[in-house]
Amino acid sequence: MKNSSFNPRIIRSGCTFLMILTCFISITANSQTPSDSYQQMVKLFKEWRVFEVPPSLNGAPDYTKSTFTERYQGNYQQLKSEFSQLDTTRWNLTQKADWYILSAELNGFDFNYRVLKPWERDPAFYKVIWMERSDVPAHEGPTNHGIIDIWNYHFPLSKTDEKSLIDGLNSIPSFYEQAKENLTGNARELWIAGIRDIRQQKSDLSEILKMAGDKPSKKLKQSIEQSVAATENLVLWLESQIPNKTG
Image (cartoon, rainbow, N blue to C red):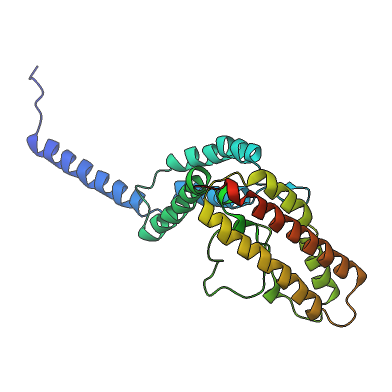
């Protein structure tokens, strides 16, 4: 029996075919868009935006230290971990731009929590009433999640707008009691400048009452009066703390 032999041409043809097939598979895989990992990031983004809004405490946003620590060590770290495991190698430029946006927001939360801490250091963070629209898409400077943009309301108020405004105003007293617990920072300049913003809010509340007309509803008038009292009380407390602020 003759020994069988290999034909070099067949071997070379087979190798060439495998190379072409590999390239085709690679090109096909890279053209798949959006990828599963991108869809996972979209899901993470939606979860992140829900998480970013703090829970409520007595009708106001909860910025207490215990709540922040629990959220940071729990859900935030989980979101951050899942985000870091995303495979972006086959993403197009638009998808990668979205990745950078979410990355910046996650890092911003981390920087706020570890470094800036406006809920601890800056009384202006607790300003609730905003009379005028900002010249940028979001408010300039640190702002809380319970702000009331008066420029969004049309006076005289409809029943729906009045209820919305009253609900927002009713959160101010409890929010300012919380502020006295949260504001433990020692940044003297921020403290003094922040008092000015809170003091201005008293005038803004009085202006809202005028905007409501000659006969504002009893509920609206009561909510404004309670908000004025809470604002005055917070200003007095902030002023009493100035001698202790040396940073």
